[in-house]
Amino acid sequence: MTSNKIRIFSGAAAVVTGGASGIGRALAVELAKRGAEVVLADRQIALAEEVSTEICASGGKAIAGEIDVADYSAMRRLLSDTAARTGRLDYLLNNAGIGIGGNVEQYGIEDWNRIVDVNLRGVINGVQAAYPIMIRQGFGHIVNTASMAGLIPSPGVVAYATTKHAVVGLSKSLRAEAASSGVYVSVLCPGVIRTPILEGGRYGRMPVEIPPEKMREFWEKLKPMFPDVFAHKAVDSIAKNKPIIIEPSWWRLFWLMNRLFPSLGIDLAAKNFQKMQKELGIAGKDWCS
Image 1: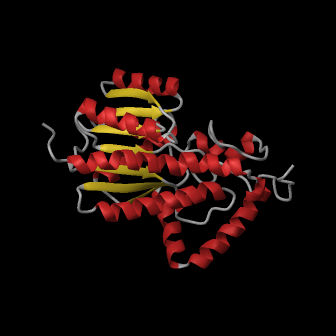
Image 2 (image 1 turned 120 degrees about the vertical axis):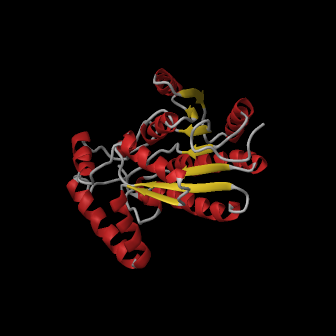
Image 3 (image 1 turned 90 degrees about the vertical axis):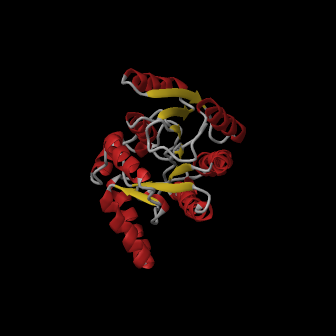
């Protein structure tokens, strides 16, 4: 019989979307190290299976599942099957996401639809599929991956920031609503992490050609954290049921400044964006070409 208590983390059942690479992969590996049985849910099924094999070879428990998070029926089926197979659903990490960079005038409506479908609708689908299960069993922890772009103005990635602000709002509001049910909700707000999404990722898009070496040089100035380091710190914070988890920790200063002085935050973001465009050699380019 399932005990009415979440497991931290030994013997827990955890589903990680976007678990084949980047932050999702690192979170899955870290959870498995701590004794959780992990389901790696990803469109990149071959890569997810590789990660699953590596986890099992290291003595952990993991399986891979192919899923498009924008498909609610598939998400509900995956989570229901996991709960039925393991007898519980301790954690859902809604982590799958894509990036779209560039100025808004370069976007097409299909870009907006795509990023909303993955970054926001994917989280909504996960929440809507997992929350009733967790309510029924009397415990569970939903962890949604947003970004610092969900906390501060982020010109140059406006569509991405839009979805991440929405994920932060969803997470804070659901945490308050779920407070009396035994279900926890947290939101991850990473700063710059050394993952493929820095250059768009497999399913993302950059509307202008920027030499990879220039892009890497730009991101290196922001001291990207390695995913495994981020995952270790993030999982520690998940264990403590922290509501908003920001790593690397120095990014918390930007969040604090934007909360205290929002107009100043917008002005600084505008100036930094202009500087970034010059450094990357894209200032004054015809973005609509």
